[in-house]
Length: 102
Image 1 (cartoon, rainbow, N blue to C red):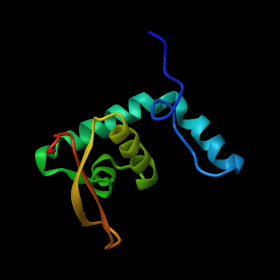
Image 2: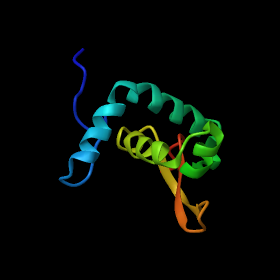
Image 3: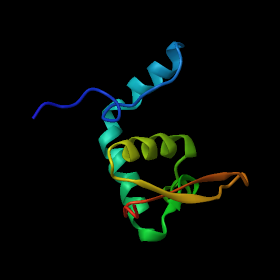
C-alpha cells in the first residue's frame, strides 16, 4: 500500500512563509507515532471526551503539538467534536471524543 503524502497524513501549514513549511517537514517523520499517542490519550477519557489542553497536560506536551494532531485525527474520522468547554486560558475550546455521538 502506498503511503499517503497529503494532509492529514502529512503535517500541514498555513500561509506562504517558509517557517511553517519547514516546521511541518521537521515533524513529518514522527507524525504517525504522535497521532497514535494523542489518539490513545483521548481514548482514556471515553465518551466524556477531552480538550486538547487536557491531553497536552496528560502527555506532558506543549499544546501546539497536540492541537494539530487533533485536527488531523478529526479529518481522518478518528476523533469527533462533541461540544465545548473552557480551556486553560478560559476561552471555549472544542471537546473531542473517540466515540462518535452523531
